[in-house]
Length: 273
Figure 1 (cartoon, rainbow, N blue to C red):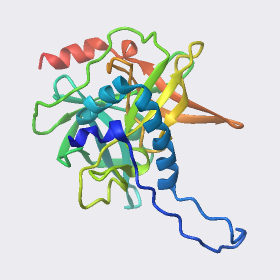
Figure 2: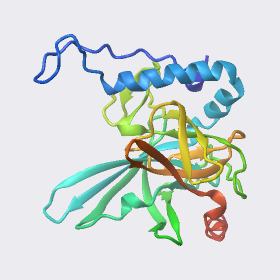
Figure 3: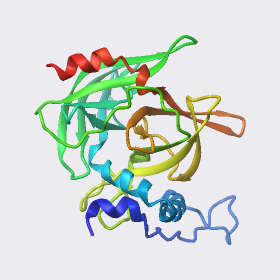
């Protein structure tokens, strides 16, 4: 069975929680590690995919187009920070689409930018275009990057019109985590052996508020999922995941624009370079 069928199977071996006595925690209550939470989500996803095998095939076919992107920021005081987000290949691998907000840093500057593919290839990147605006008239958050060394590879097909369906699918690398080639959750930036695969989440798109996603099954999109591709049932790229906002106990999972809102004239001009 091919490695890329891992996503369709999603049988994870949970990291066993270790009993721990800590102040304020009853001895019989065990701490739940984050990998256990992801494992629980993927057990739900595995069950879902058994009944929807076409979705598993669609997600599987798009794994190679997803990327783990790392920005290295140096602040005025000399401190450096590595910031993770997700992205995807577009236009036959000539360019990469991701979120833009990570590139706008106060009192700091971007000193390094690279991406890792699921086959563990490292790519140095250049920034081609950025947009990060949030006001009552605009809500865009995207960046277009380009590999320093041009390559042709699997890329996502962009939907030229607004998405009319309800279910959407996110492929990204939450919190520095992913799946390796043994189907085990790993820390993507620390793994030494095995390829790193993105985690998936299936969401329900709000018909009345199309910029919001509600979770159904799969891993929770948290920090690191910024820029992850949002796919329709046909596997076309319909938007980008940006952020999570909370109002009391309600979490709004934003995908911040349809691909029809992206300036296609920009993409068209890139494809002719």
